[in-house]
Length: 81
Image (tube, rainbow, N blue to C red; front, side, top):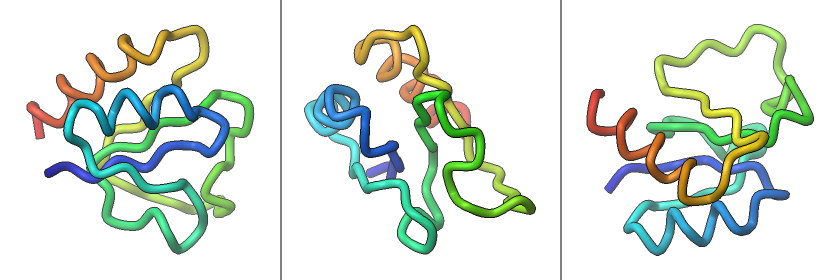
């Protein structure tokens, strides 16, 4: 099961991802490590609190997207890993 970190304010996205079988964790420094994908609201550009964060995981900006559209993007990106 893919592990997806989601920003706290995106409760509808968290629920939609859980409903689709994803392991959803809160995005917080130290608690969102080794995730397959990160979903951000677009409000805070430094969500992990580090300026030098590097990851091979996908980062999805959910700004302007429905929860279903975010799930579709997560599905595509996790499948392509």
